[in-house]
Length: 260
Ligand code: ZZB
Image 1 (cartoon, rainbow, N blue to C red):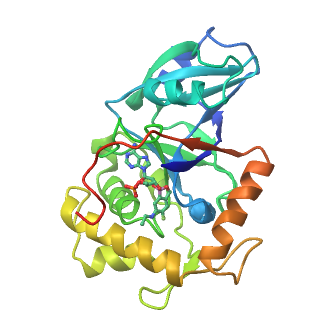
Image 2: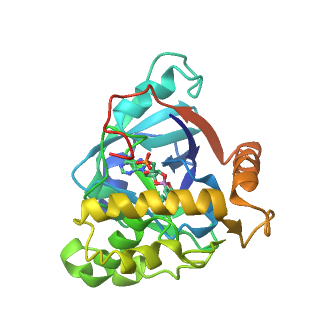
């Protein structure tokens, strides 16, 4: 599985995360949360970044001045892909619990929310996939839309500020069947009430992937007016060129296939 790993630079730590990393990295070092995505062309629509609140993350050294927050599993994979200064070995500067990172403000490359987006909790993040960090695009990902809706509804319960989950959801891809807010449309159409409706969410994701990829037209950014199919590799190349993303692949796992 070939992902695009995106570098979301930490602008301001949540208090517990700040405590956990204190004195463990050089002053002025850059730290990035690094989600893995299959849809680089949707990065304009990022409104937050998810971590699993109960998952363990590490702060891994890339080089003297740069660190990534990802799962240890992802760090091991990256170590063999020439991503860290020392090939084949990982160096963990600190441990972080997902819930401690929640509230952190990060810069999301290409996002229309230039002021930065918050790290928020998502119970369904899988520790065994990608980097364990997931960037959220509620306009085009039904899972993300269901989660931000739930978070905004029960902000106190989740220990977050309601406004962190209520950043404006801008239309970024036009589709003939589902309009320009594919995910909200499908969540409503399939009567998805919460992130726990996993079966319908799986179906919605499948539909959104197909429609977005084969029929979608980009509405924003440098490739505005182009088909998703052709814009996707261009957006990816642009992010990589700018040093804001890199290729990350993961060994094929045995999983239930997307179509069931
Ligand atoms: C941004 C994005 C925008 C994504 C979109 C999807 C969509 P898949 O589809 O099951 O093969 N993801 C990545 N890592 C994890 C994880 N550890 N736990 C849960 N979800 C994760 O998985 C690939 C997608 O699942 C990734 O692409 C990521 O969300 C999420 F508009 O990144 B995506 C219709 C989907 N749209």
